[in-house]
Length: 108
Image 1 (tube, rainbow, N blue to C red):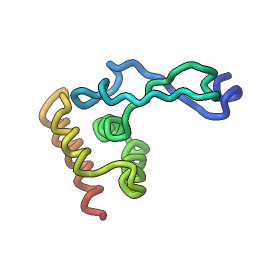
Image 2 (spheres, rainbow, N blue to C red):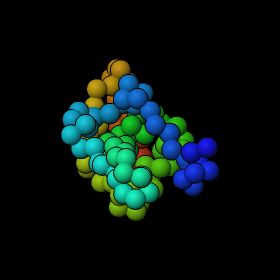
Image 3 (spheres, one colour):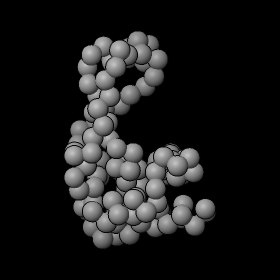
Image 4 (cartoon, rainbow, N blue to C red):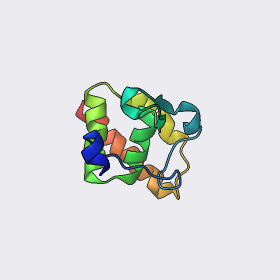
């Protein structure tokens, strides 16, 4: 029904669902315009979103981060800094997310 009304798909998630860097709430971006009918949607800042996708590591997530980097929507250096401030379940998960970013950085 949402897609039929607004013409796109959106999937809201709880904050416990994603792995996010420290202080991400301070960087939330409000989205409010005539299309939201006065409601405010709070969106992740692009680098915080990319960190969550590097942590998730699904093929579609990594392609998304790659497109962000290629099109200048995210900076590899900022992503590295944000990864450093992210609490991961364990050191292996952190290393894996960092390695995913490094693979994209080497492509450039």
